[in-house]
Image 1 (tube, rainbow, N blue to C red):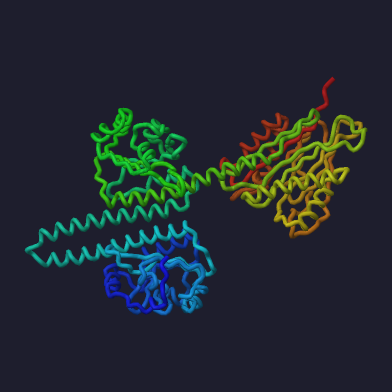
Image 2: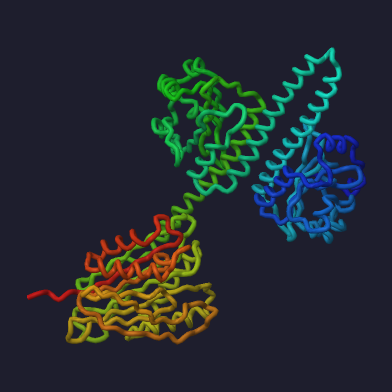
Length: 625
């Protein structure tokens, strides 16, 4: 960025700026359109303060602002002494400062103290003749290194804001010209034609500016390719609205069409994948890395394959524009814009569509990154789930259902493993440890902590024969209170032991604030094991856990679950637990896999907000002689 001297503060502001502001109808008063740009800057760059700053001869006016405190917010104006925008106006260049307090040009500016301006980024706002009217500013109260992506976003928003200013100026000038022409009766016809032409140009310009604004707003928060495709459906409006807008993502030597998730289009059903060497406009745009425009059927017949001509005939397309979608490093795909009637795409519209394709490319790149990240996270979480032990003595089954929101990578888990024999008299039936737990949080951090807690609990159990669940949980609490692990949540840790000289089994468990386990006896009676201690968290410190025992008859079923099964918005948890008890009583004699799926299908939401874990263990039934 060009260095600016202190003397630039005293450089006079041209009298053409106030004249242009009067054309735009802006003053030291709130303007809805300009306030919207300030909000967009605040959201896009995550800054507490943003404003549209325009320079007059003796002050700086703020028709658009967000986050500025009083009294400045009410005044909508700053004195020359507080202006950083004037540097942008005088130089015509962006002003990007990580810390104004450390900048020789700005460190004495009273805005640092009065407005809490520390980090500052301002992009020029210009009229149609390139005259700099002010700046679109992003402000932080803390030092900040502005990255390239943020500055590009701010530059794009400044271009859209400049377009809005140009349109306002043009509209005002059009109205003024029309008033003058109406007074000249001899030139009435010419004035009418000129006014119509200006109106058409202004409307087209407004449509183009609206497209860019909508693209910046609608595509800023997309969460996946399907979401991007869904928002493309209504993005293009106004004059020259296309009949179809398609999104094709580049693969290895081919293009894959992303179908609309909500509306079935014949074009998307017929051609989902195109090899890179296919003689289609979209693949040409991919191969040649440039915009491809097909004005009419004659051009299609002359330049492309019979398959392409037949396809576009069946779809009813006449004019086609294909734009490559460039990511930060590679070509991501192609945007296909089609009209069913001949459509002239002028220079301005091409420029606008190209700019819009930049927003779409950013959204696609972000979506591909998020989709890949979510896929990796899901695979990681699935890999962290325990393989259930093989046993001839008890039946065991588990079910894990992730949250519907792909970003909700959770900390729910289950665990099961055999314990070593304490003595030779244990026989062939060995004790079994089972655990179900839920780490607080729904992100990769929670999933990582879950893996650590599971391993620590296994170690604590195996290091403390005769493998008391309460002793293991007490040791886990002690470790969490010392180690730098931000772990918190609930769990049930239980041991199943074969009874001496009996086909019965003994259940010993310790509950750290978890939903109560359920026991179903062979006669269909279901009991809740409501005894529990507090949840575990490092802030609670070491805690002496208690444990409880219950005798299990042959054919009894133990069911452990996480709160995602029974706790959700606008539902009574106690009523849902009662439903779970009824389901277990009625279907508890079914194979465990079938039982768990029945419970999940009946109780879990089709699109659950939380992860769900179910673990069931059934003691062996005595063989009939």
